[in-house]
Image 1 (tube, helix red, strand yellow):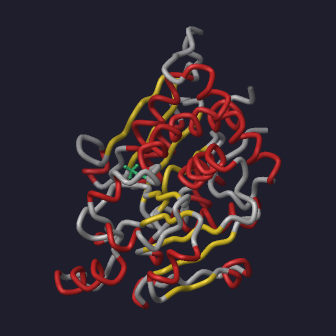
Image 2 (cartoon, rainbow, N blue to C red):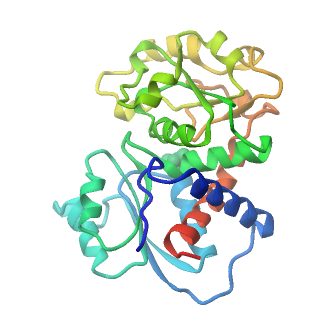
Length: 305
Ligand code: CP
């Protein structure tokens, strides 16, 4: 029986720890190597929304695992332009018998409903504001590499929490692995999440206390494309002043704390360029680790290695 990866709440802590250990093992073995075995089949990488890190790292992970990635990158040049639905697109590509799907889409796609009609494993590569499980896994892999364990650590999410699928996946992962979640944002960016675990998170309305609390801070992009109201220049100026990461605000962060951002970064909004050069930043380590987490997911969850 195959498995999907739509969320993390359906996976046991043992399974998650095994996935992360496998990713670290694959990275340590030889970060640049590609398996020499024959190609086992093709995977359908369906990116209905834009992506750089997730798409490219899934492509690399496929190649490393001996799977040929076939990519749908936006609607241009496909029959989506002629009005074909996302669902029909997926069902037609499934008829060509890919080994598995990697799907990025907006909330417009009802992913749980779609997978009821499929006989092909699906990996969620970022679904609207619902979840981005491999991003949360690669964040935690990076923290485990630095700390050995994430248990009882305090992880702060700073920014557009309302639209963050990364936060939603971390809520599931934190409950499973035992780390604490705090979030800091203006009232307009507070999320509505129906989960008992969410009630255990801490909300900070001021960045100073939030940064002093955190063992790691994850800065989040202001997702202008998902705001129905206008996020204008006045709002952004105020946001940058009160919630932006910069040389000054970083003086409040612990000396051994870590700085993360899933990318892409809006420089001059949620953080200033100098933050990426701070010794505590692991932003590009996250991107490296994305390849190995995705390779581990493909090998363990889909190929049953
Ligand atoms: N972090 C992330 O999902 O980046 P992309 O949108 O570039 O894939």
